[in-house]
Length: 105
Ligand code: SF4
Ligand code: SF4
Image 1 (spheres, rainbow, N blue to C red):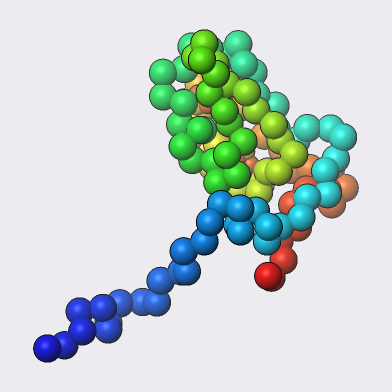
Image 2 (tube, protein in one colour; image 1 turned 180 degrees about the vertical axis):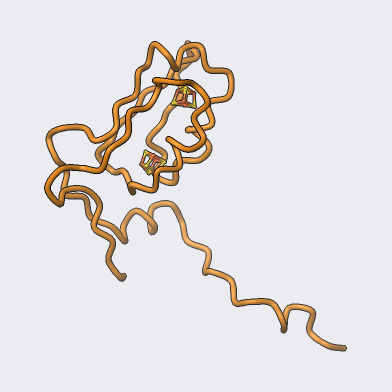
């Protein structure tokens, strides 16, 4: 019987969150390149940023708000794309070559 997986493209290997984070280094700039207005987030019913951020930088609070830390940001832009509340996220790249540095393991 033919192998049903034979014609499928090769999968990316499964990788744990810790291993994923370990493949990067962060040259953190003192100025946050992403600002999150928590007063806007307080009225957000979707909190899509929590689901989409690959670095788990958006943390929901028990009161329904969001705590955000920019320091281990992959600069993927996904949070900005999915956020449905105007003014909640102000997004730029880090200054002067700072930010994430991807490397091979
Ligand atoms: S950043 Fe946007 S998606 Fe995330 S909680 Fe705030 S308003 Fe909602
Ligand atoms: S740019 Fe990507 S990694 Fe950075 S906070 Fe937004 S979703 Fe997370």
